[in-house]
Length: 117
Length: 112
Image (cartoon, rainbow over the protein chains, first blue to last red):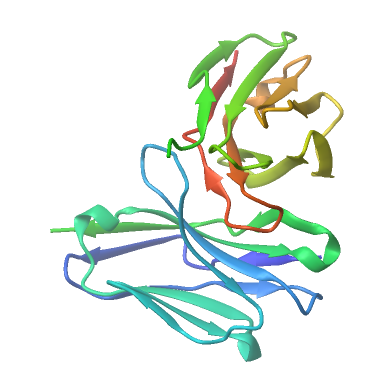
């Protein structure tokens, strides 16, 4: 069965610090997708990125970057020069199209990021 | 393009009642999924509909049901409400199965 582990429950940083959110996943499938979502206090889940299992290239989008390593089953998320607006709960998720459950996301427990001035 | 909309945003019910939540996906999206979020269990998949057919179902009792209409709008129903059903119910739409899912703001259900 698939599983996503976000071991960091809560992280507090001072603005402008870099922060990395960890995500470790378990799956028996060779084809799968990994996601990151941001949940601000308003509650809506905001899509950040989707990565398929065949693409291990790291990705950078502005201050955000993602490091996908199949060898360690990890998909870590780094925010560079954090800002107060980054304060939110971040979720890592996994879906397995090969099992016919392409749209069934298995979420981690989330990491609450608090950025202070 | 308008995002995913959910109505109502807040709902208070008492035990034993039933409730219907509504979700309108992004225009052109045919897949709608529902999730329950609680402090204890986190985010859990309820079910997914695609072209009016339920494609996947999570591990929830039969009191939880849903449907999708021809215009892709979806409703979920919870009958015989229990205190533990208090949660944020999130709807997500996707243009196709397995694509990026875009979430609505959720309906916060409180069962007293």
